[in-house]
Structure formats: C-alpha cells, structure tokens
Length: 449
Image (cartoon, rainbow, N blue to C red; front, top):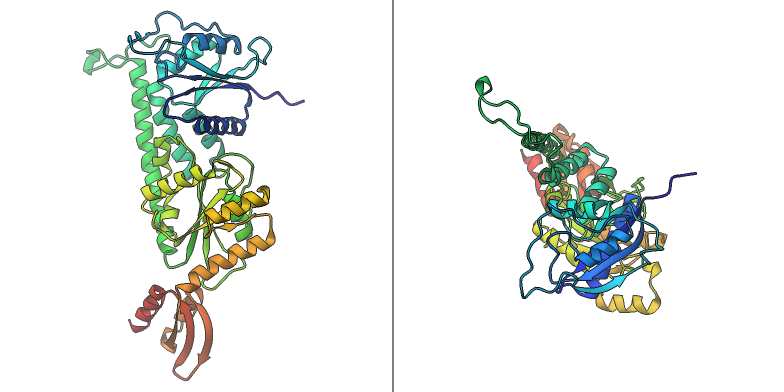
C-alpha cells in the first residue's frame, strides 16, 4: 500500500486591489501547483487585510485557527520581532472571508502553502507557530521546476534560481556565532559559519552561470544554423496543451501530463507530414502568474526560441475561465523578450470541453482564432495546413541555374526550398524553386560567388 500524500492547507491574504475572482483563481492555481508537487490540499484559510501581517502574514486570531489545523501552538515564540501597529491601521484580525473545514474535525495538515512571497522572518515565524513545513508560492514553483528539469541546461537554470532564492534564507546553526580563524597568522575576526555558507553559495552561483553561459552559446549556434528554416514556437500558459500539440504536429513523443510545468525543456522537431522546406516546431516552457523573477531570468535563454521563431502559435485552454488573463500574461512576457510583434496564430484549445453557446461567443470575441482540440485528427490537419499556408504566402518562385562545377548546391536547394521542377542540361541543372525571398537571395549569392 502506497504512503498517503502529505496534507496541505492553503493560506492567503486578499489585498484591497485584488478582486474576489482574481483571488479565487490564484488560489485554485496554487492548489494545482500543490497537486503537481504531490500534496493533497485539505482546505483553505483566507483573510482580507490592507497588507500582509509583518510577523506571520495573517493576524493573530487567524494564526491560531491555522495552528488548530496543523497541530501547532498558534503563537510566535518570544524573540520574534513584532511591528507596532499604527493608529490608522486595521486591527490585527482584519476581515475574515473564507474558511473551509472545521478546525477540530478536519484532517491535520503537515504543510502550509502561502500564496505570497514570504520574507525569511515570516516563513520562520509561521513554522514556529504552526509546527508545519511552510512553503511560499516561489518555493513551490522552484520545487516543481527542480523535479521536472531533464536537460543539463534546465537543471542549471533551476539550480541558479534555487540558490538565489535560498541565499538570504540561510540560517545560523547551533554554532553559527563561531568564527573561522581569519587573516594571516590567524589574526582578525574571520568569517562566521553563516557568512562562509553565503560566500560558498555566491561562488556556486557564479560557477553555474559560467557553465550556463557556455551551454547558451552552443544553443545560439544551433539556432543560427536553423535561421534559414521556417520555425514555429508553441507558447502559452502552463498546462494549456502545448506539449499535446507538439506531439500531434511532429509525431514525436513529447511528455504530456495534466500537471503544471510538465515541460521545462525546449524541444525542436520537424512538422509532419514533412514539407519542403522543412518547418521546425519548438515547444517552450509555460508561463504562470507570479513566476519568480530569478526564474524568468534563468529561463530567458530557453525562451529565445520564441523570439527567433517566424510564427508564434499561442495555445490557450478555452475551457479555463481565466484563459484571457493567461493570454494577456503570455503576450506581456513575449513583449519583454522583443517577440510581441511577431506574427501569431491563436488556438482555442480543448474546445471539446466547451458548450455550443460558449463556443459561439468565443468565436465572436476571437474571430481569427482556431477552435481546436489536439484529440481531433481533423483539427490537427487544419492547424498543419494553416501553418504551412502561412509560410507559403511569403514565398516566391525563382529559376536557378546550377553549373556542374557547383552541383553540390542542388542538395542545398532541395533542403531550403520547395522544388517545383528540375531539368538537366549540358551546362548543369535548372531548378524551378519556391522559397522565402531571403533564401532565394542567399542561394543566388552562392551561385554567383
């Protein structure tokens, strides 16, 4: 019999600028992240406040309620700094908005998931008061990324982000006040164990970044080699169905799972049935709200595939009520990568889960989009045809005369253009080809050199 999943309770403070719908969507997303991490969410504890409580995120009363569901004391031990309340601030309790389950009868949780980024002090105080493992949103995402990373590049990127996150959270051990002997001849105060640990972390981050830089350089060389080949990048929110489309469009074995961040590594394969010239399809890492800045920076090289693509295919889960916000976030990040103006195609994916009336409303709202399902072979063929037609619209026909002395270029033409006809003469070979203008220009330059 398998071990039961660790039980978790989700904690959140709804700030004034966050609507009820946005707050609920964020909580549902955190619960899905918890499921991906292998946790069983047994309830929520939320509170309305003007700001996060500086000591332990929620007010004292809510903290005690939380502790009843985790087996803790509900009290932050003395020695933890407590900020004095200003006269015009609301009381520590704030306004309660939602509780799920009964603190006395609900299953006790061993993990507390907080839908905010916590300071080291807040996290430590919550752990002391609840007796549970405390994870904020960033640490949950990092844990998922670390579990799902497969290639060396992805593992390096995740490790850098993890160390950057953990560096300010290193704690002094039992002998933390002891200092290593410093200076020549042992003179000087030297470094404390904590300072030494932090320096080691900084050195390790620098080492990883150097290694990542060399790998990113190799990836850049590969992209440069593919520059003449039409490329499509699948982009979108995590779990929107990008990997499913990658699999059906390329005939590959892309990993598909109903989990957030199932794919972290960029995969590039040829569109099938293959065309001439070949069209490459890349599957990129998914986006998510509140993605840690250090993680965005680390994965920038992974997202370069989107910036270099000739066509961006936005995949959205049309059955998700929040897909409009997801689409807006995706476009915002792509704009930051200077890819916002690239030609794009919108796929309203998982349309088989949408009712007829809602489908009609979606098509009125997004008339240029394609309502599709990766499970429908007809939809797969339609998307394939749409992608091929996009590239063919930009192509032009040209007659190329290849002398026998440069006959090696014939293979190059077959690789980079669609050959309409091929005729052999005494002087060489005449090929009628169809390709993008820049490809035709480069082929002619090679013939004239």
